[in-house]
Image 1: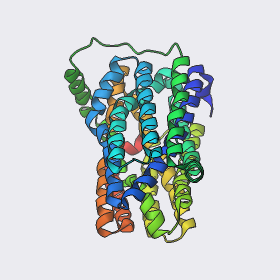
Image 2 (image 1 turned 135 degrees about the vertical axis):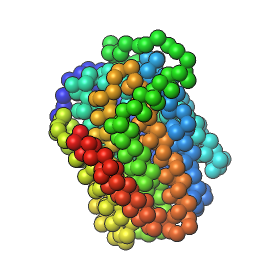
Image 3 (image 1 turned 90 degrees about the horizontal axis):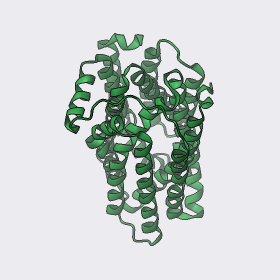
Image 4 (image 1 turned 180 degrees about the horizontal axis):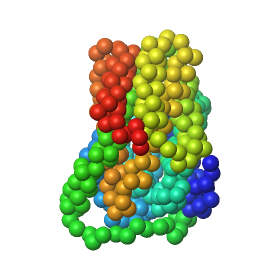
Length: 398
């Protein structure tokens, strides 16, 4: 279960990332609540989420080329430093009480641009830290870090917003980036894959797209990620609205809902770490996608806080199980020289498609209500996954 932690570099990197992720979730919850209080609009809440992840769709392929060409540790040192500066800038604007909606929108766009270059390097560096023999375990523990932070961060945000205010939450996030920056400085002797001759940037992008296009398994796996991202994960952007208007709870209840999904996600990550390199990952992948759809439908129709919490535990479990399995399968079957570009394709469909899902969910919630929006998304997600499973039965045998 802990095989990847035998590697010194990974241990150091994991701890630094975990601390930083807690700060990121604190800011994410505080920022969502701030946007909703400034605008009182479900649509603008979705629009800010759209702006935050749209650059992933536009620039991730360029980030993937950088990941295949440049030392990934150096890329991450730059991107994490910029994230830190942006967090402190948001904190200052909020503390001075001059924060406006357009400030948050601008910060969302800038964060998204940086993430487009950060994510492919961060995803593809894992195999260089631990090797393929510990890859699934390391990916599972990365998910565990993310989702432990997803539990701790929102719960902490609910307390901190009452104690030190929203600006304090943003300052805390800025400070948390020191942990991951220090870890990147400390780690050494990372395995570097052999680099091909550098060609024009556009040539490398086209070459990567051609490689993905001619591998049906990669196309199908990335398509499943896109379906889950657009229809299955866009509910998150509507959580402040659902908490206040449907469940009639306050910021502490909102934080509890976010933490519930994180608890389920953490359970999935630990389960994957314990399972190791098991067979028939495809069957568990399809089943976990189905669980997400069903749990979201029940959640949308729920008027009881406890039932809603239970549904979100299942949603968190299924989403992390499915995405982590796809991440592992992709990195296992992809040659080293294409890993950064394939992972940029993964991030485009995981985070880059999400803004369109956020925008659609926000518009749908504004038109027909938040519960109806979540039900429609969940039903579409379930039907789409069933079609993929039926049209491409080889996925179930992976």
